[in-house]
Each structure stands twice: as C-alpha cells, then as structure tokens.
Length: 116
Ligand SMILES: [Zn+2]
Image (cartoon, rainbow, N blue to C red):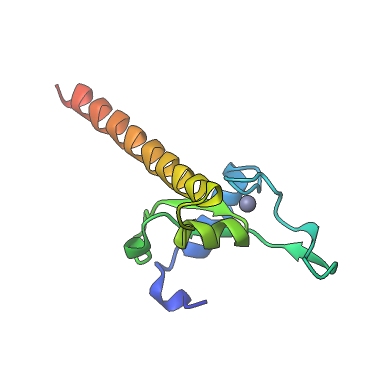
C-alpha cells in the first residue's frame, strides 16, 4: 500500500474508524479478522480496509473514511456494470455519499445557527 500518499494520521484514523463502527464492514457487516472460505475451499482471515470515499482526498487530514471488507472495497472503487450486483454497488455508493452530504448539511446549519 502506498501510505506515502496518505495523510500521516491515516493509521490512527483507521483504528478510530474501525472502533467507531464496531469493526464491521459497512456494507456486509463482516467483522474484522473473521475466518472466511474462498472459492477454492481454503480458509482465510478477512482484514478490513478503511476506504477513502473520495479517492482524491487521501492526503487530507479529515478525509471521509468507511470500513469495508476487501471485496466491498474493490466494488466501491470498481462498481460492476448494469447487473443486479452492479446496481447494488451503485446503490451502496450513493447511500454513502448521501450520508456524508446530510451530515455536512447538518454541520453547516448548526454552525450558521451558532453564528446567527
Ligand atoms: Zn463487506
């Protein structure tokens, strides 16, 4: 991983994001360090990623981060095409962006009320 692109606080924020979200993938809910079985029938351990919602924000101190399993991180960055799975990828991406916009609108209106 090219951590040199990331803000120096990334590892600290990764731990905070995982703690705040109960160490679960935001999309499927699998817990960090769960055992899983791959298509070859082999057991492996799922290590959650903390995904930058906006790829261009990796160097920002307060970049938007969400916890995702490796599979859902891949589909967040590379949503599939016009299939039921692809539409689910896009719906999830839209929901994440909507949550961020709503939170930012609430923060903005709170700040405006305080300064009024
Ligand atoms: Zn997942």
